[in-house]
Length: 401
Image (cartoon, rainbow, N blue to C red; front, side, top):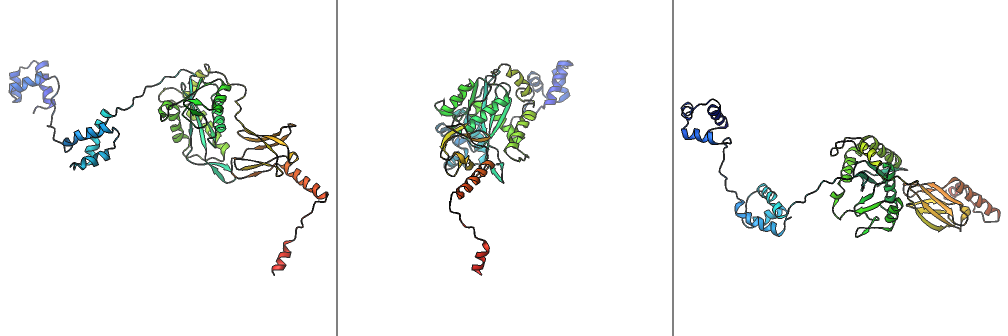
C-alpha cells in the first residue's frame, strides 16, 4: 500500500518537476494505474480496517427502546436488562454507546450567554462555610454568608449571618449593597425561604425592604441555579480562594478578613470571562446606578414585653439584663445586627443596651443593673425583710465528724 510520504512524493515529481506517469512507474515499481490513482486523489491515503462486529449489535434496538421509554435510565440498569436477554459484554462497551445515543432521546439543555447592562441586576445567594465560626467563650457556631455579585461588573461583596431568618438575610443584603456602594435596578434571588412567598411573589418583609430602597426583585425558577450563574461562580471562587487555610478569632475577624479579601483579591483580579478587573468595571457601573439612601432600611426585630421581677429578656438563648427600676413597666425590645436595646414605652427611658452575643446560653448583666439590684436588696432588708442566715461550712464539717 502506498503511504502518505510516497503519495506526496509522486505528486511532487509529477506536478512540480513534470515527470511522466510512465517514468514514475519505472522508478517506483508501481503500476501505472496505481500512480494514476495517487495523482488523481486529492486527499492522502488512509488505512481503513473493516469494522468488526460488536457484542452489542444485537441489543442496540433494545437499548433504543429502553431510552425511548426513559431517556434518563442509568447505564447500569440498561446492562442489567440486556444482560437478562443474553448480553455478556463488559461495562465500558455499554456505557460508551449509551453516552453517544442518549442525546438522541434526551436532548441536553443549551444555555445562552447573557449580557447585562450596567446597574441592571445584582445576584444574591447564601454560602455556608465548611467550618463553624468562633463566636467567643470557647464556642463555635454554624454561619452563612450572604454573597452578592453585580451582573455587569461581576464585583462582589459578602456579609456573615448566623441564621436564615428573614431579618438576618435582609441585614446581609443591605450590608452587601452598602459595600458595593450603589443600588442596582433588580435584586435576583432563588426561592429563598423568608423572601419568596410563592408564585414569584415576595414576602411582606422583602417587599417592604425593596420598596424602601426603590429597587425591584426577581425570583429564579425552582431548580435553576444556572439563572444566577455569576454569583454561583463567585461562591465557587470563595470556597477555593478565601476559606482554605484561614483561621478566625471571632465573627468580627471573619467579616474583616472577608471584606479585605473582596477588596484586595476578588474584585481586583483579572476576570476570566470579562477579561478585565471587576473593580474597574464597578467604577463605571456606579455612575449609572442609583445612589444609596442616607440610612439603610430598618430590618431590626422589635417586640413589646413587660419587665419581669427577674429583669432579663431572652433572645437567641442568651439572657440580657434590663433596668430593675422598670420592673412591671412595658418596654420595646429591639435587636439590631450587633446590639440588644430596650426602651420604656411610657417615658422613653433606656432599659438596656448590650452588645449582641452570638455565643449560646450566656447571661449578660450590665454593671449598673447589678448595682441597682444590690441597692434594692439592701433597701428591702432595711424594711424588715427576713435575712437568711449564712452558716459557716465549718459547722457542717463538725456534724459529719
